[in-house]
Length: 161
Image (cartoon, rainbow, N blue to C red; front, side):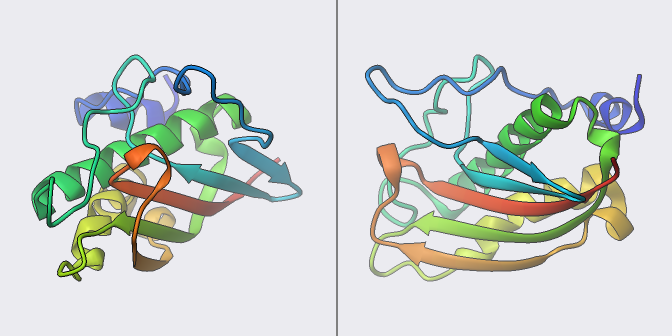
């Protein structure tokens, strides 16, 4: 078993099945675009183990608590890892996490976006370690996200050929 896959297993984490879009939805872009020594990850949301949207939908600070938002960001990280594994064939090809943009579907009075997106960052650093997992990051609030997602995250990683 590869190093990152073994680390996921040791942490008791399982990657979800490939993304299952809601009925009637077609998207015309790849989830991961590999170019040279980089992989660019399109915006992902939290997934259930079967690849469907996780039931953590709605606005953080309204329908969802900050902790539920944190969990949505963590599940989003697992969804991103699943897409990267599919695109790269091996998560050990990732040499560094470079940047992430975390978007939070937030109630107007909620402004603790960085604490929600910490769910993603904490997962990545836990799995990849502080050297490979540390990344630059922005966390912003949005009036809404596609399909009612609580969190959407995009990322960029450095990879070896």
